[in-house]
Length: 261
Image (cartoon, rainbow, N blue to C red; front, side):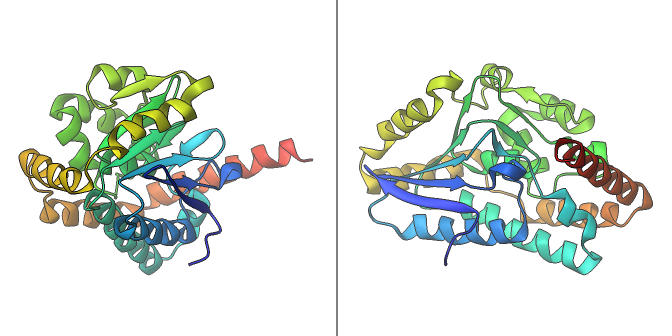
């Protein structure tokens, strides 16, 4: 596959996948999702890579779904997008290689869900992460209701999910979700150096360790995932959600017009 919205490169045992829609804060449209699925499978089979590193170009890691596309989708198109997303997060979590999310900037909605599906998270100082879907009368649809409580604990996860507030990288580090917080100025090199401490280990041992630690954490519940998606699709059909999405798109277009009169 030829990539339009991401880059894939391998060096020194590290397979780096970079989201590359910086003008849209790397928001996830269908094309980017399809490319990311391809890159995840490519990483899984790439013998030159022993660890994966996911990061974003520009100011953001990923600002969630592309809400302009979200607002235009029919119910059937929305359901199809969610099915593709479920496969994407499962492929990322089930990748044979350990995967590090290098959160260089804000990771919102699906962007945070991608980070949660990774094995480790490092973040730039000042980055904010969260699942603000409730502010649009929606809920997360990429397993966020399942993976966030597993990694953060139920009470704190409920706070973020119920309020939609964003947590800082430092806050999530203190809560045990983010492994390390690095200065923004040196983030790229620090994240690469962290991945390198894994990449120099035995590929076979790393695969085995990932399997065992995932067993220790407990299996992901596909029935709960199905309920999450069913609920999201129901909420997406409501007038309240459609009004919120339309308002968000209109405000975004007004800001863009003001910048480029």
